[in-house]
Length: 357
Image (cartoon, rainbow, N blue to C red):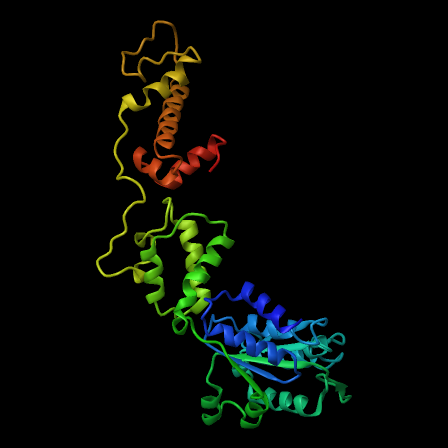
């Protein structure tokens, strides 16, 4: 993949403003991708380090082979060596056959060690040897196996500080520090926030407008969870906001300015008057030629025989529900408020009537 193609692909993964620091980052990734150099990607949680790793892999000569990710913090230490290097039959209890490791799976491609700062010291020694000698032994085997992979590592830790604290090997640190790539946190590239928001909003199929004040507040937030936190907020707004537009009141409390109070998206709930549903009730009852005097405010007439009261009450309820939905333009939360119901109760009533929910 050419540098221009890599940059174009990156824009679909990490949307940014035209003058964003990410522009230079993508240029650097294009240069690095063309080499075989080891890469160390640093950045806070949620900044997109794995996306950068994939961009480098896809822009390299190894793109036809797989990128094999390993989360060094998610695999128990007792299993991590076997996960990386594989094992032979009988190497330990439960090893009933030979098993290839992630290093073997990455043959010809890229091995991505995510959260490499979590790698135990005992395995740091073995990884350093693999990088120096380009060979390894599966667990329980004395036979050396060639290792043909490019290493891309990532961490949200300060590895230099970890080295000084004795938690990370100095020799491995400098072996990794060939092509360092730092992914800036979102608070240091605030101009990207509106672009990222628009990208995630559109990706969810949303077309509702967002008030400018909302985006101003988002740009002022520090985003400790970075892009992942922003993406989760977009999902929350899409799912939980029922108004025709997204307003400041729709934001979580910690994002609103002091004193801002959440208000309903539509008018305050008011009681439906019988006259408002009269026409709907007449249609429901009169088209079926059933007694409707009680529902319409007149005196009930029982001279014509027994009345199916449950069915009549159900049809009265149907009429009020239809009128409430019509009045609120189909907004179930607002309709439920008009009817004095919880939204979940109204949704359940619609579901029982085989109505769209």
